[in-house]
Image (cartoon, rainbow, N blue to C red; front, side):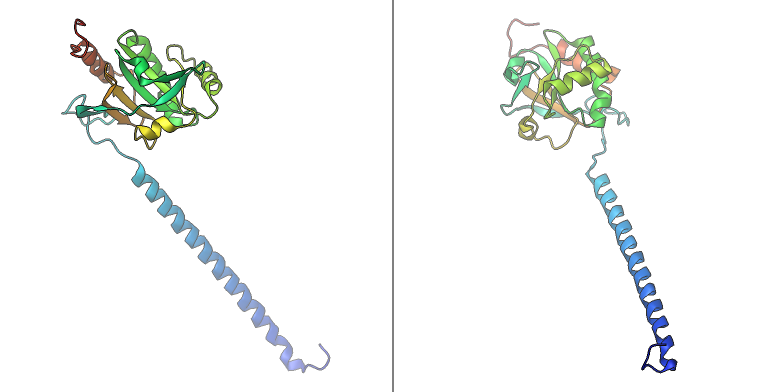
Length: 225
């Protein structure tokens, strides 16, 4: 008993404590509910940002497969001048590939889908690479050539050369908002089409598509058949 306070008023404190506990519990439940709703909305927004391939017109217009959807443009598109470097950090541009078809793949070692498709790009380069065609895997890793070389050694990449754009400016100039992204470029340095997202680059569909271009006449190079 507290001196000076009538004994009959002492129990009044218990309901106050109980009410405080109830309010605290309700607040905790409300916070948890808000967190769940926010997490759901974030997942929904992420799913909405992930494009789902709807057609494979460049390969087989009658097919419903989505493993390889390459959007070929009605007309070749002139590309902006982009700058990058090779493994020895020598400056390069797309003009260095002029005269050959190029499959330009923008990627990074920290990108899981990029890592997964890299062996297929390596096999495509081993199969078709030469004077008329090259798979140019352009890394946007800020760590530079060392990071890429370490990754190539880790997964035994043999045929691909190392190209680096540590600034990320090339991807921005090409209108690429996500990786992996792959552009098919003709002998004159123009974009024929592009693929957003990963693919099996050594699949029969891709090999057939590229061989079709390689076997076609090159009007911008007289005398080449």
